[in-house]
Length: 114
Length: 112
Image 1 (tube, each protein chain N blue to C red):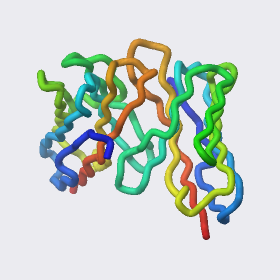
Image 2 (cartoon, rainbow over the protein chains, first blue to last red):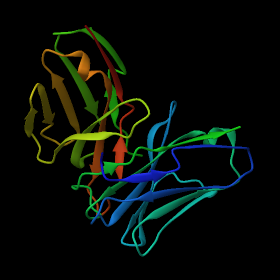
Image 3 (cartoon, helix red, strand yellow):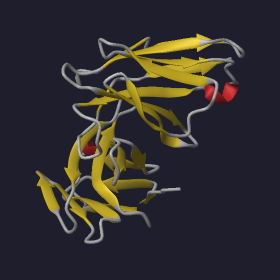
Image 4 (tube, rainbow over the protein chains, first blue to last red):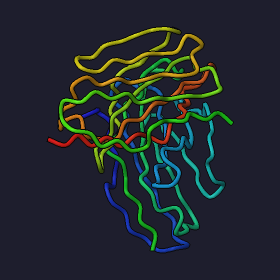
């Protein structure tokens, strides 16, 4: 158990819909990261928040957005869903915001868009 | 675009054999991490290497960071069925972010 929690574990929804994925980091960690893992693309970095502010952005689509709240939990919002958005979405956390600190991954949310 | 090329993509070996997984890039990384992932679960950190030429050992696993900090390898001695899984390398960029670039992964199957 990494200490990072994600809800829900599974999500099935239809194209065009909007969903919210939730992540609680390890106690004391200030940074939260979101990743997308699909069979053809591997694990792709989406976005990083550090202490409530956006720190780094990856190949995140405009239909996707995220935020980190004062209690440090984070939400990833996916809208106008397409079949290709079906994937595993992982949240990770680390104590600070720089690359030398290990990231601890949650169990993931499996999103299926039908 | 920073890329990490991992090889081989798939490896199926017998228990007791040795193996090496490679991770190569044209980019310089501030750190290189290796993760192991089980089906349906999140990646679990195995090791972080930060110094060029650094070698770290974790029981039967040996990790090496290239002198130029562009490549890394994972060597497993006397592989066991419990080593089966997806092995991922991830490079941390020399910046003030925690962004990691992941390789495509190596799926290892160790047959008893």
